[in-house]
Structure formats: structure tokens, C-alpha cells
Length: 194
Ligand code: S6P
Ligand code: ZN
Image 1 (cartoon, rainbow, N blue to C red):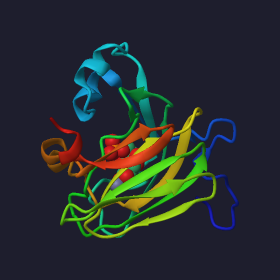
Image 2: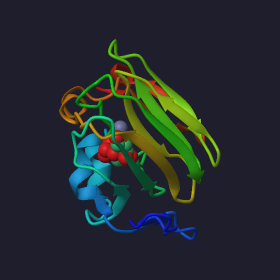
Image 3: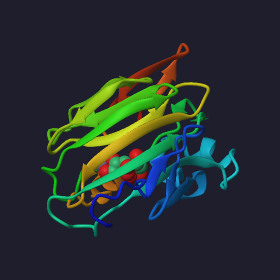
């Protein structure tokens, strides 16, 4: 950059679909085939084509991962849909440096941000355009789309957070977000596991 020059930022949010445009942007597409294990209804998952996209993530990583003091930015789009009666959702994670926090904010659609603390207490926050969510230290987080349109959520997190997916892959969240009588309900895992 030259002194006194006014330039455009290298990355912007596409106002039409809220994807990130520019460089460098990392794109991730999570299909049902690779996520089938996270849903309770394994048989229900086989009824949906494995190439079906469940969510996409566009991330701008302006610094190397693990850089202290930096920030990352992303937009996640969770598609509408259910496996059995469980809403399409993200894998969910704690941060690898588990005290690192994060902001989420609702941009489009509707859903629930599912949160779980280290004592395995799980609760949710409603996500809608304009909703703002502070995900504190040591809190696992997962997004579920409860609407008929794409759920788009912005996120900003420290560049030295990392992601701990393993713990959720092994133990899951202590509750699942399912549709009961047309409404999203958090149901304790032990009550719906046979
Ligand atoms: C990163 C942030 C989001 C998620 C994204 C996908 O810390 O929380 O960008 O990565 O929503 O979820 P997941 O659980 O598959 O990373
Ligand atoms: Zn995160």
C-alpha cells in the first residue's frame, strides 16, 4: 500500500448471497455424505442423496492460523432440511484453545445457535437477521437451520482459536434440536437415544 492511497479491501461480502468475494477466501462445502454420523437418524440419512450440501463456509483468513492477536472472518450458509426430524446443522466444535471466544450474527433466514458448556449443559439462542451472539470461553457451538430458506450467519473469531471437532464427534452435544409439532425443541440426548 502506498502512503495516502485509498484502496478497496481485498475481500467483501456479496450482497446477493452473502458469500465472501475476493482473495484470499477459503471455501468449504459439507455434504450429507460426510456429515451423516452427526445426525441421530442414520437410516433417515441414507434416504437423502449423499452429495446434498448441508452447509457451506466462506472464510477470510488474513493471517496464518495460530497467529496471536489476529482475527478470522467467515459466513456460514446452512441449507434448509432435516434428517428424520432433526434440522440440518453444522458439525459444531469447541475451540482448540478453548478459552477463545467468538461473535456470530444472523444475516438471513432463521435458526438456532446451539451452545454447550463444559458441564454439558446445552441451550439455544434464536438466530434471525440482526441477532447477535457472543460465544464465550469454553462453549461448544453449532448452528441449525429451522426455516425454509438458507440460514446465513456471520462469524468473527481469533486466529489462534483452532477447532476441536473430536470432542463433539465422540460425545456429541447433550441435546439435539428436533422438530416437534412444527416447532424446534431441544431434546436431551438420553431421552431420544434408545
Ligand atoms: C469458526 C466458526 C464458524 C464455523 C462454521 C462451520 O470458529 O465457528 O466459521 O466453522 O459455522 O461450523 P463447523 O462446526 O463445521 O466448523
Ligand atoms: Zn468457532
